[in-house]
Image (tube, rainbow, N blue to C red):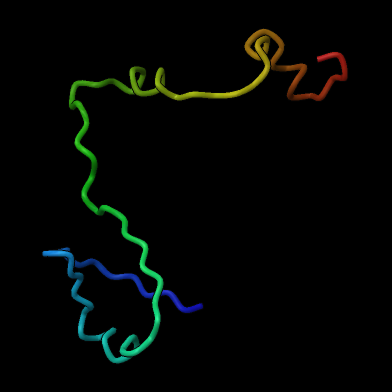
Length: 77
């Protein structure tokens, strides 16, 4: 599988393929993955700690207390 990446602006449901890629892609079936290239607007006053509080993790309930035992791999942990 060959991958070609380029930036374009969508307008009225149409994506323009840059001229340098048109010849290679003409007549081929292609898979299209769309990624919004514009950064998501966030609250400029939000601190890193506020953002970290939203991070969800999974693990044992006593991980903060017995983290060394889990890292080392003690059987009773």
